[in-house]
Image 1 (cartoon, one colour):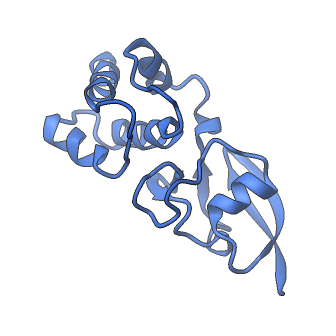
Image 2: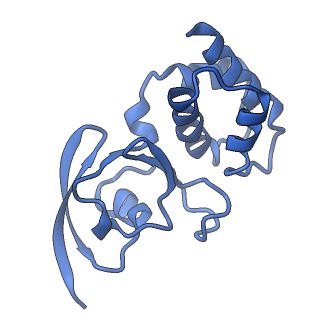
Length: 151
């Protein structure tokens, strides 16, 4: 079994990991770097629980190889400490069990950065990439809109 050492930038820090070439980013974040915010869900890119930001784009970390990440900027939910969208999720009760919440927060934060004037259709389109089985999406939409209104 071949392993290599890689250095990746996560949440503004350069981190080293000794990984198998087949390891996906989700596995490396959780098992090698101790960043457990991104959650394993479907493991095939459908649910969005493992969403992280890579070079300013939301990415399902279960679908990308960690070997592809050197030279890219990765942001996990841990790197969004005190982001306005996190506070908005709390204020607008935009979660229930919380399992999907980190992926939603990363995705919503990226949406806000890329589309500071997002309309309802854009918000709904972006929310299609993540699944929540516990609550409706109305509270999440409200949280997004509250952050957009503050900008």
